[in-house]
Image (cartoon, rainbow, N blue to C red):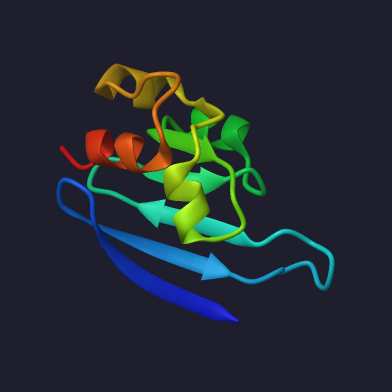
Length: 99
């Protein structure tokens, strides 16, 4: 199942949810795109985002509510330069990335 939602997080952010792309028992894939970067689930690769200079943040959770509510687990240097800080929730990080 593919689901797309819009969120108001200091501007509009668009979320894409792909249910268990590797099959049953695999985690869901979630990305929330913002004006200057994105929040992604741990299924995706932070090292690749760093390599491309993306302002990316990693969060955890099986759905949009969880990934936005949970504390972030990591970020790229570009996200930190924009003001994302350790301890922020996914939603707080998206608000920074939407400035």
